[in-house]
Length: 337
Ligand SMILES: CSC[C@@H](O)[C@@H](O)C(=O)COP(=O)(O)O
Image (cartoon, rainbow, N blue to C red; front, side, top):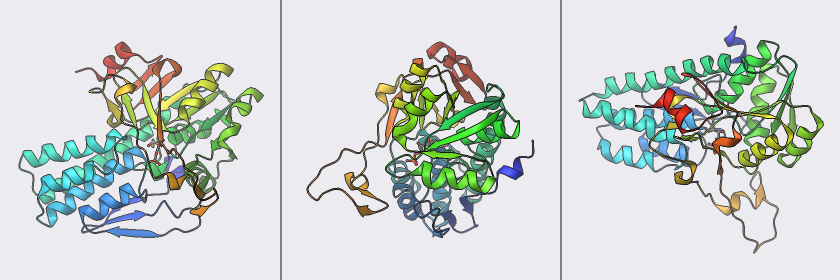
């Protein structure tokens, strides 16, 4: 497959002495790049969603450790600061644990640079492999609905769920693509539509609240999403709204696919009940695009992830293979010790 036709955005770029990030808060109106010159700036970029998406924040954090090493900082402090940037996506902890193991083995800044590059390169390869594996599950003529942004912007490139969609479109299996807007940060509206339009893949944006109505119409056969953490029993944390999509999909006989690299699988967490769900500032919900729309004095509750139970998932697609009807036993076949 000609992946390069679909794979042009590289939002996380290492420049030897700083990390170059495409600021995802401003897309698509503005393509502005920011330079992170130390681990604290990388931490802030992750916390403020300048870089976002589970694999991308893990990759960015690894480069944050490289910056700390180049500057002779106390690496334990840098690791702890980066680790605390966001709680739900386990790729962050996974990448930092990988860097920590290299530090423990005596790696210098140059060796850490090679490790961060390996983390980034492996993510791109995993996404390309998942794209093919996931697309193979989709019957020709299908329509799909995705949520949030899981594309090149959220990863080293190509994407997880969006990678499956790219591969499925390229293979002529997917005929209709719908993207939910993903309130409150609008990752679907701002970022997924940006990637799809750049790729020339015809797609329609829907309001998050239109999903069940769309499913009832018969236009979609699969919901395809990414993940921020997959527990040992297959329960999956992903962007808020994913759980209600899975419930609606089950009701309408629409299949539900999770696409994620093995760096998103957390076998140390038994089930979704133990996954910490990030709560963000309620003001994110009280406005649109930074402009207040809700009356002053109103309150809001703003959890930004939810957990979809494994029994609502038809397939978890990873670069190691596909797990159909996931449960603890099926997960341990690919991810057991
Ligand atoms: C390949 S990205 C998978 C997930 O990280 C994605 O679906 C998601 O929930 C991102 O949330 P975000 O808050 O934008 O970092």
